[in-house]
Image (cartoon, rainbow, N blue to C red; front, side, top):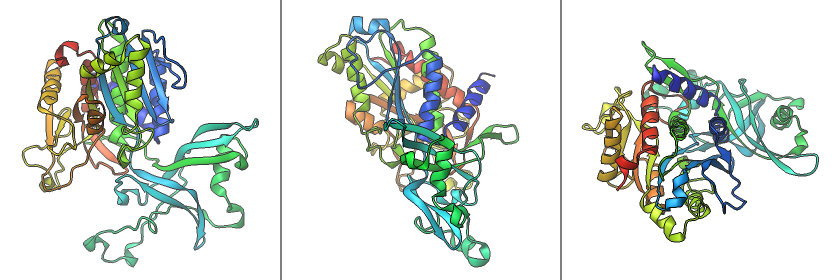
Length: 441
């Protein structure tokens, strides 16, 4: 079945991407295999030829695009942009995390994003991230690190010492209750984390200058359910949409460049904490890359604005499926089903950037591809989350639709989605990249 190949590759993508840095490297491996070449943002793009390119930003964000031969010649083409984000809520190590308490070596952590904290308890956890080291010549070099063996555990308090927990609910103090246990304390365990990382990178501990490390669950992605209709995995929000976007642009590029539209995927970081960083959707990354493409293909400032006016963006972020145990938490007339198809997200407060026009365009695209479509609206009496969609729309004035595949357990350490929707979303985004006639005007 077509969805099986997409599903298998998605599982591999999830398995290889415990951090945003690894997710970008996973994307690069797929893009490079499809003929996409790296562009250096510090060098001139003054003569940008037709071709396939990607630009990495800060190790955790990336923009990939295809410049068709007709784009510069006609100077009227726009962009078809798919935006997603590489980060997921998790526990991240503090700069000096290691300490000893009551005979245990523990690591101090900070909660990143809106994590479901209880889901991190009593799990086999390990460490991954990026490390800056000083090489023998005194130069700074960034290296990725990843451990795939159980190193840590956030142990829950026994019920004998918290008799009311099942009736009154679990309350976790982020400072006191989430520090994972790393080892039993002893004199030879001093600076054990630095020694562990240094050994993995084959450098001396003193060569480590700084690091950004985070915890990840070691349980691999797996199919489940009576008929394997579910995918259980960490970081589905939002690596599943990153994978769909990257796979779609690779497929679209393989179909040729006989039009003047530029297909583009942008994977931002830091969406889960507001996008306000050099690598997030609030940064000038997307606007700068678009402007440099127009300029590098012989366009003008006016051509840049004309291109924006012809452009469209799909903000791809996972969506809430109806939970059978908490039906009352969902808007009664907008219940979204797992494996019911891509979901268009609406919000009058502009937490999503969808409007009637962009919703109609996406629905029509899916109709042509024989893909079912669902609609999501949040309960009015509950706060609604947001995406990169409104940020992109407001910063660049690009018409945007917010979409996503349905899922349960969003922001848990283990999330779940259906097994047919990844292929459907990938097919929809592939068609979007080629959608000059369907989505123009």
